[in-house]
Image 1 (cartoon, rainbow, N blue to C red):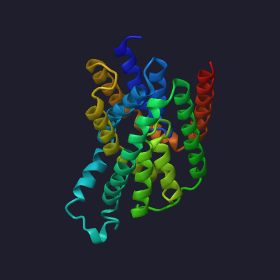
Image 2: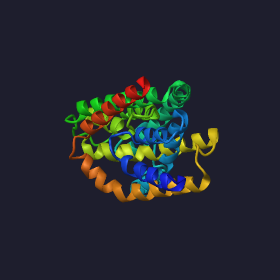
Image 3: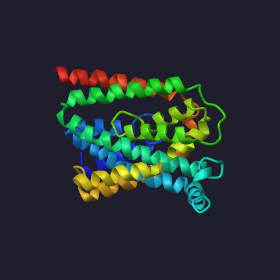
Image 4: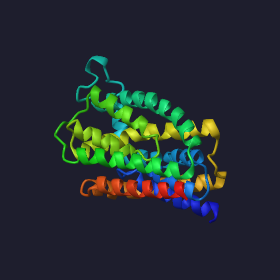
Length: 270
């Protein structure tokens, strides 16, 4: 397949799946592995494409971002998690936790995926998808009525988001599940999760670029992939957020994971 066409298709996959509680990174890594990339190249490419959906989320949540920036001047440490500054404090503290756990996970990830064969890598992604699906199942009916996040929410969700650098772990699924378990309602959990995704996705993309440059892709194809992921991400976020509120995506995630485990084992045994 032509590299530019493949880049466009993968950009569309990233743009659509980023908002769902299934792992867009895992899906992209599986696709790149299928066309001959190493496990490490596939994972780095998946992280790089998150920059496109970070742009889409920035545009979609531009009013919320403007409100957060407006809170900066009135923010005070003694009232960090008071209603007026709770969202800003949540994003900042959660990002600190994400950078800490994500950096450690990325160092381990590079060593791990570099040693895995194709079948083992696919099976690993599948296993992580299954775990993510089970977490979503537990959290599905746990939504409450808490309006504002606190410091515990920020550290917990931020740490989990950092671990989502592992392919197969759904960032949105894991963070939304954690917020639901902490008593937030579905709509509030989605909003906090997606706001938090913006700096995390940008940081992951920059990390890959600084370390390796463009991950196994030509500049033209990279621009196409990022552009398509941003456009598709912006066009689908509203619809897909609505679907997440209605459908049992834990079942989709778990089924996809089991299929990947079976496929990986089959590849490894052949």
